[in-house]
Image (tube, rainbow, N blue to C red; front, top):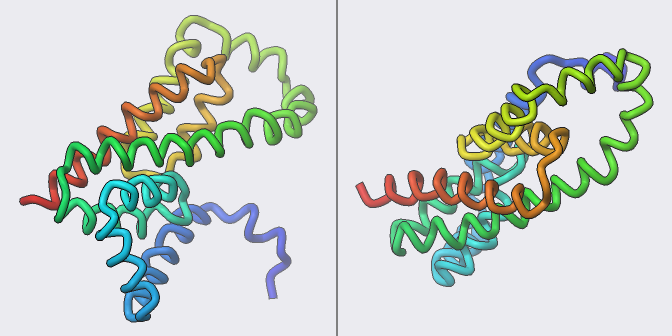
Length: 185
């Protein structure tokens, strides 16, 4: 049996978690409770899109949330689904952003300093990195990939909270608009 620390060093843990969530969604879709929950979210359309949008942001829940948002969008206006789902995703992203910026980054600062923090800090504050980290983070948030990496890049940069909220909404709503529009093809 492998020690517990093996998982932390495993290269494909995020891909594995995404695949596990897809398999779990497939297996859970046979349960009456899950079917009723999806039907309930479809009935409350835009509130359902908001609630599901919250779960559109995490590696653990992005796959099921995408499927549910696609199903909700089949009976609703794709633009409104994208707006309400985007607002929910902003809430989910902001929770992750606050957790990363207020807790995780403070915990890893000493380790960062030991690994040459002053040189890395100087590099991150060059004009190229000052705009590249938030832009790269925003592109990751817009993609169907889980938002944690994009949020991490944005939280490491000096982006203000209000800028993060606006960028998160625009990028999530854009990605959700594509998904919602595909449901009408």
